[in-house]
Length: 268
Length: 268
DNA sequence: CGTATAATTGATTTTTGTCAAGGCTCGTGG
DNA sequence: CCACGAGCCTTGACAAAAATCAATTATACG
Image (cartoon, rainbow over all chains, first blue to last red; front, top):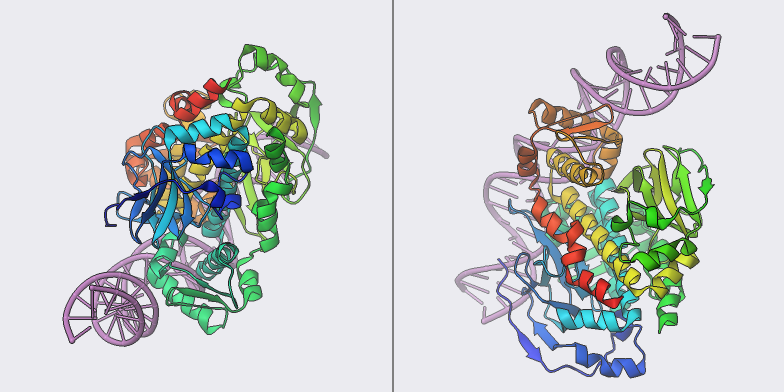
């Protein structure tokens, strides 16, 4: 059972100083508007590793932008099984769902100490309402998350254990390396083998054996909260992973280049 | 190999006569605006069973609202495997993705003869731009599809063959029964056992055996393009399926009741 | 240190896939 | 009207993948 949520709430930070800007929901906002952003926020909050940020079934009237740290979105089933739906990195919007009035259906847990930007639901909606380009950004971010979920669906449905692991770790590597530039294929990564199993529909034991095989083949290294990608080419070939296709669809520039992005800017 | 796309293009139908209105992207539009909707459409189109509506990798500059019939969204992998990502029913928006400029990554195939409402990409974006409430509707529909994809992820990751089948068929039953009211737990359903397998990460053979077991237990009947749910309670218990939770999140009324829905209306 | 969490390994069972062969149904063309 | 073929469903025998059960062995941390 994850420990209870600890709340350390700070005054709103000045959004103009936020390094994350381009990666978050507020990306379309320009200088003048960003200065007024703090009016929509309740402030910043930090949580400790292991804390639940959102708990399925418990009313939650806030949305969050993850500012720093890792989180996981997951679902607990009645029979004790757990499915990890997504790993969230800085910039991720947490708590958005089709019916914001109903309690959340998924939990979100901090995998490291983490900090986030807190939006009360009503103010978040006001923001979306008053800044149409933010609404489009919201649609784009949701479409991106949907696309990633579909990729994971393919991963679970049509790949075996080794392929699934290779695919997930490559994806995580690329996403993390974009946030915290990586040296020599190595990134800090807090996921345990049990997390990987819960995300991939495998048991931790089977993840362990399969990881061992990949390690012995010289494809990767994993341990001590560190992931080292030794042979990205081979991993990609094994998993049928196409970085370009992924990037074309959800890359940073997709919003800037894509039509939806153009709309987002034109609407301003 | 699915046969080539046949195109029968008709003049735009009058959107005021469209029975689907509430279920589609245009739901937030009122009387005056709906009358101008045809200005954004290229027209209606019909396709035959087995036709590909969208093909992954082939440029496609249109979006569609499915008006009648069934479709499937799927992905072909390099090694010949296939993953079904979603089954689409009337009202579904087809072809929306994070980067509309890049070719689609998923294919969409008609599972019955089908008809749809065609939007050229540029005009679709103009609609979203000029009618902010349509933008919010787009965000909501995408969030709904994302939520469903996450449910499917849990289904593949943490349920065995019988549970997966029970879950999927119940979901399909409920969705179809909302579109075409069902009598005695029976609906017309064009999915083959191979379709189910490709959606559930199982082989058609294993689907067959498992379906047989469910049939012998008196839980359901499936054949002749007809699905009969004999014991919905037992199926739901087996699958851990909670219709209320699903409905609370994505039910028809969720938009009307939910805050996002309120926004959608207030923005007008 | 001592405890808790995470990783590892072996033996065994269960679930699912693979290969192969027939059977059923329905529409088409002779 | 019947024969044929395509697509789909069904079943059996066997193989492979993954889960389960059960210890151990690191590793991290107060």
